[in-house]
Length: 59
Image (tube, rainbow, N blue to C red; front, side, top):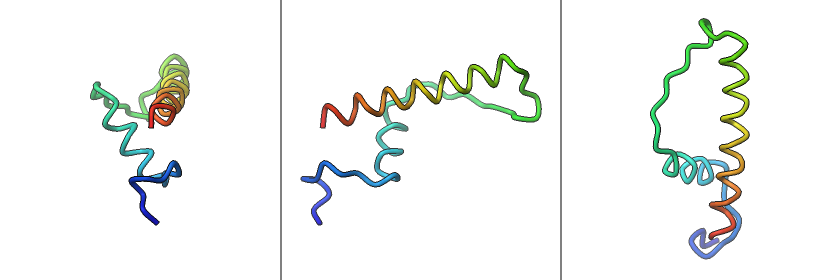
């Protein structure tokens, strides 16, 4: 199957697109995370999903 002309992307391809779209470099230490950090992580994951959806719409 020709991936370049397909609208179906593998998980790896989606992750690559999301990685390329992100501009920030953030380190996260789960052992030192408090409730605010965990909430921020959840919000960031939801934002990543929305951003990936926008990338997929453009393709």
